[in-house]
Structure formats: structure tokens, C-alpha cells
Image (cartoon, rainbow, N blue to C red; front, side, top):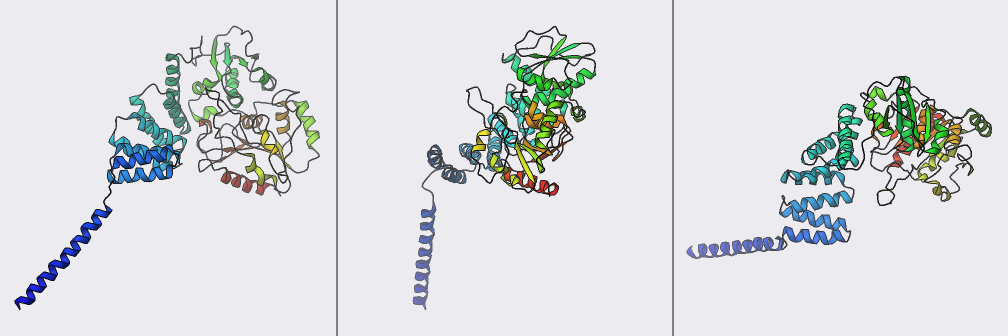
Length: 457
């Protein structure tokens, strides 16, 4: 009996030893021989080679070993941003900020991602307002906050941020204060000089405020780029037009066109005005009416590429408003539809690369030249059934003329389009088609095609 117990104890201890050996061996084999710092260095190696997928994998391993490793969180946030994983990026930046609440850069990056990539206005405001507590000299923070507040209809806070930005630029010597700058005081019988400092579409859009100043009894003088004078002269919103560089008349007040919406928009309703407030030349309307009368199809003018601006180094900026011409191909195949190109500057080279199955009509080279910039465009628009365009000067001209226009907007668009999905208080004849996902023009065109197919038979 003792012998049996002895053998039983021996085999029990033997098996327990084997199990312990297996357990410790597996533990040894699965234990990482790398530290979190090692994984970070390996990830940075792949990051420098632009192999961000592998870099992210190693950063994640580092974070698995040390969940509060700040370097791993920041590197992950950056790598996710550069691979388009914006939700993950902002989550990692948020964790980094929670670990290091005095690191203002994390707040700034979150604010930019929330606004520019996710279009999350409320969270963008939170991040940028917190960031301003650390840095009151960030021009971009004021711009972001202005746009977010304006899109949400809080024009009081939008104006506050715009004014703070303007004061900052003056203090930094980047802009100079205007002599006799208008502060919103009485304008009756006063000469107000408006200075052109914005894009062409902005000039067309904010001309509505020149009209309101004129209605209040002001004498409105506009200093503007010379080539715009012929089309603006037909608006009736300006008393005197002066080309840039010419001698200025005496004035009581002056202001830039870009500041008009800030001073004159207290509530959303202030953006509204009677349409049309721009006009096409009547003779040109008749001439183009006769030329287009032979086309019995549903006539649509299209524009796909806004003017491209350069940065301080002379490099063209990426334009989120631009859409490749090829996306308009389905519209050209609709039965009983004729497309007319209203594209005059950027994007015209794309017409050379489209296939023969893309049916689009192109105007001659003297279009808008012989009669002045936008003069033929305006007259043609009055003879079209519809204008379909991205956010550019053509869209504003169509809206100001009161012609039917469908505008296609990127996910993150200018503040003036506010937040209504399909309508805008700026132009009652305009319908909006917005991206739901950053950079996704395909679904926008699908929506346009679907709505257009209801009209055209």
C-alpha cells in the first residue's frame, strides 16, 4: 500500500513538473523581447519609408505594452491622420491630451481634424476654444471658430472671433488699419468706399450688402479689378466703379468687401436680399437666345473647377471645391440633355482628355473676351434651363441673376452655406448637393443624376 502511494506521489509530482515546464516555456516564448521604446523606433523607421500601415502596427504594439505611452499615442495619431483614419487620429490625440493637458498642440490638431476632416462643429469649437486659452495668437484658430459659429448661426460669436483675428493681424503688422474705416454708424448721404480684397465669387455674393448700404442712403463707390467693371456696372448696386490703382475720390468711410458680411450680419436673415441684384446685357441675352434656340434639348451649363490660389511660396493650394470633369459623364449621357461648358480658366485642359462618349459643347475662344468677363456667361445663363456647378464664381453669378442653379459642395464648405442640407438663404433659385463623406463626389453626382432624371424626359 505504501508502495502504491509512493508511485502515485511520484507520478503526480512528475506530471505537475511537466505542466509547470510547459506553462513557463510558453510564457517565455510569448513574452516580448522588445520594449515599448523599441517598437516605437521600429515604427518610426517604417514611417520614414512611408510604410504607414506597418508603422501603425508597431506603434500599436508599443501601446499594448504601455497604454499611457505618450510618444506612441502621438505617433499613432499622426500616422492615422496621414492614412485617412480621422476618427482614430482624433481619439489618439484626445488620449494624449488627457495624459498631458498642458500640451496645446494636441488641442489644435483635434480642432482642425474635427472641423476640416469630420465636420464636427461642436467638438471643433470645444477644442479651439480650449486651445485659445493657451495661445491667443493663432490666426487659424480664429478662422476655424468664426466658420464654426457662423455655420451654426451664432453670428455674434462669429463676429467676435473675426474681429479678434483682424486685431491680431494688425498687431503683427500683417495688415494695416484702414483710414476712416466704417464701424456701422449712420450712412445716409455718406460716401462709402468699398475695397476689393476677396475672390470674384465673394464680390458677386457680397454685392448684396452694397445694395443694402445704397438703400440706406449711402453713396457707394467700389474700387475693383478692372475686368469686373462691365458685369458689375449692370447690377445697379453701385453708384461709382473705379478700377484698382486709379485715383480715389473723397470718402467719408471705407471698408473691405471681405468685412461687409461681418459687420452687416447679425442674424441669418441679414444674408437675404431681393433677387436678382445682378443683370446680364439685354442685347447679349437676345443674341445668345437666338443661337441656342436651335437646341431643343434640356440645356445645362456646367462648371467643375474653381480658380486655383497659390500659397506664399507660389505653390497651388489643394482645392477641395474642385471636382474632376469625368464625374459629369453620367449627366452627358442623359437623353434629351445638352451640356455646355462654362469653365473658362482652370480645368479647361480636362476637356481634351474626355472620351468621345462625353457629350459637352464648348464655346469659342472669344467667349467672355470681346464683350467683357462674365458678360457672355451671364447672357448664356439666362437662356439655359439649369446651371450645375461646384462652389465658384459661376455659382454666385447664377444665383445673383436668379437663374436655376444646382451647386455641389464638399463636406467642409464655406461658412456662408450654413447647415441647411439643400437650400440657402443667399439665393432662392439655388439648390445644394452636399458631400456626406470627405472627398466623395460620386454620391453627389448620383443624387444630381437622380433629381435631374425626374425633370428630363
